[in-house]
Amino acid sequence: MLCLTSLSVALAALALVPSISDALKDGDCEVCVSFLGRLYQSLQDNNVKFTSADIEKALVKTCKDAKGKENRFCYYIGGTHDAATKILNEISKPLSYHAPVDKICEKLKKQDSQICELKYDKQLDLSTVDLKKLKVKELKKILEVWGESCKGCAEKSDFIRKINELMPKYAPNAAKARREL
Image (cartoon, rainbow, N blue to C red; front, side, top):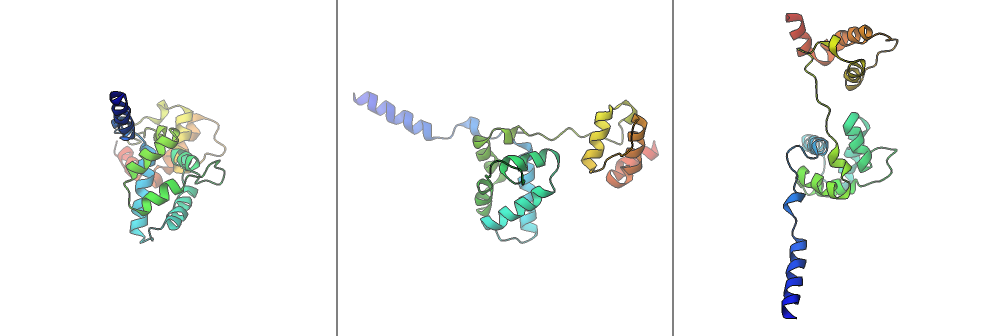
């Protein structure tokens, strides 16, 4: 009887110890870590008080301008107006204590695994890629990332022309490299 009690106490103690698998691996929670890291840095740079309320305001404000995967992240945490849930306090409280963002994302992963499944789209090197070999969907994606659209574009060549026209504004190094070729 004594052995069973000791064994159950030992097993209960082991259950409380966080497992190694809970820790984030390289590349896990890519969007969460990047987004919250930039938010934390901007809070420091702008000398914002590190109170939960001020952090939540800054988070919602940052989420208004978020696009793509970062917008989806904001939706998952409740930073967008159409979000179904609100877990902003799960970010603002730990940030107010200056907790590392990877630990915050680790905790969010336990609540909603979708948060850590978000990955940034692979970026194209516009200085070397042949735009003519890309699909129209990929050309539209380049414009979308830039926050631009191509009204009246019907042909693939229209999208390529628009990208080449906007490249000096959004990718000046790539535009310069293309002119040198």
